[in-house]
Length: 485
Ligand SMILES: [Zn+2]
Image (cartoon, rainbow, N blue to C red):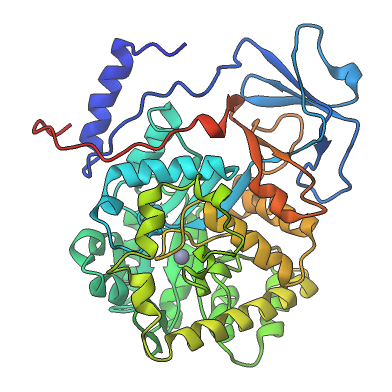
């Protein structure tokens, strides 16, 4: 049942005011409330996200929003609704720790990509691919209103976290990129271009006054964009790097950094930073030393491998089967190969493909180094960039992590428990344990034998509510009605 009460209508008009881009709000009927129901998930193989052996004989009990027990059949309460999941695998909902919800992931060749409907559909895609939490790693003007709408159920999608703002050196990444894309007027105000300690203090003070989950900084000389690949920008001055991190920590906010060279990552780690959110993808000696330092200081690493392929993953014959196509809004998928696509255009830029291929090679080798040195690794798809479709890119990212030398179990831990810890939610999310929030996915097959089984998500439980991903329908862009709604 899903009645449209006066209260929810009131909340909607309030939300409309909050959403400058006019996000169209959904009526949410897909989740069955389990507030009064106890659910017993039985018969499945259980991978709990902690990395230990899968359990074949246990059941998971969900009560309200939480997992109340995991154990033998004797833990099933008499009044539980039992779901037999024989032949399936239960895992924690996946956590994509690096996305950009403001980017469509298409080829920027269709104006419908830049509508609120596109964002709503991308949020649905995450659920279809089993992703129940996402972390937006860059500036987004509507992040807070989207978070609220997701929390209240006005929007359907994964849990959303993010930084909301970014700190960078004047004119450096991503300022130059968003200028080239014609987005400076829209996104520019959400980046603080700092050139002094006073600027840095002011930036952290203003960002932390908003509802942010962390502070993102850019400390990289490299622009790896859609038309260029140059290492000619300024990184943050040492005293600014130090100030941002100290000021953020004083407010109990984690600091996430985009770095490219080993030396940049080292400077960030030595200044006290928390998470390196991109691959160290540029060649320079000393990468292994940096990973050793990261391991010693418990600084986590998000490898972001697929982004260096920039849309290759959508080619026929790749992992991205027709079956997976259905989980993506067709407008976004078609845009990647449509006339005017920036994905296609980027393939004709002299040298760009070579630079990307080289970066992918280095990134794969560096992930193996990170693994060997014991660095905590989380999964981030960097979706939202051109050709990097929301949700779908996760499958490719998992596959590349596997090819870089991680076992399927290590990949799963990265995409669940480690992801939760990296985004600061390790206490409540990321593993299947009594007391944690019930974010669970049911997949067909055994991902420990073949990771691509993670592409067969049959059921999603988010916050204790059952969602059938096959029933989530993409919306089409509404014609303007003239009243602004
Ligand atoms: Zn990114």
